Image 1 (cartoon, rainbow, N blue to C red):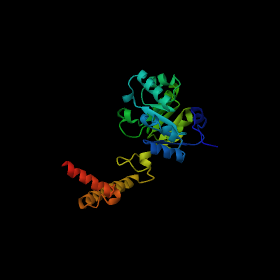
Image 2 (image 1 turned 180 degrees about the vertical axis):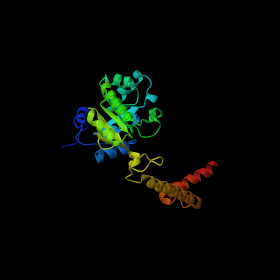
Image 3 (image 1 turned 90 degrees about the horizontal axis):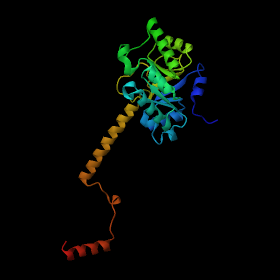
Image 4 (image 1 turned 90 degrees about the vertical axis):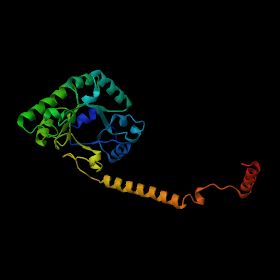
Length: 268
């Protein structure tokens, strides 16, 4: 049976029945590879999910796009934006804004995904880029936050860099889906960035990331080959090796002679 894109109801029905796979993809090539590989869920930039070719290449990927609360503007701004990307092909929207904004959007039957734990756009409130929920009090606050997202109408929450024991206990106690980035196997989906998996990330490697390929080395090799090819071209032009006869169009000898006679007669 051909693979079908899951609905929200399908994803909810899988709660507690194993883990889905989720990727952050940034290009059409990555989206097409995720589709062919059988990835379940992707997080994509808005300009990718709205690209005219996106659904041609990724017809069955459940695709989330989003804006942080720093980008979204007012609740009305966020709702208008959410409607536009849903109409263009997104399946859900990510929102790091307030619970009031989440509820405002969810009331319009738009699938909303929240974010708890280490939330980059709110990291200053939890002590920077570090794990969240390592104490009993902090873990209880995380549970309260997830329940608040559920009450506000979110169908899923990304839970990032939280002790796996805490994430597992929270997942058992809520009905919404937990998408784990460094929060262990007790959640409903495992979430990684394609750039980390493919080895194209040349910066900081987050703790949850795992490298499966070294595309950076291949890109470096290809760049060196580009430079070498351009240098060979420069050398060929300088030596006269380019262009060769096979690169040129020739005039018939009789026509060339007639052309030269005409030039001479005209004094050109």
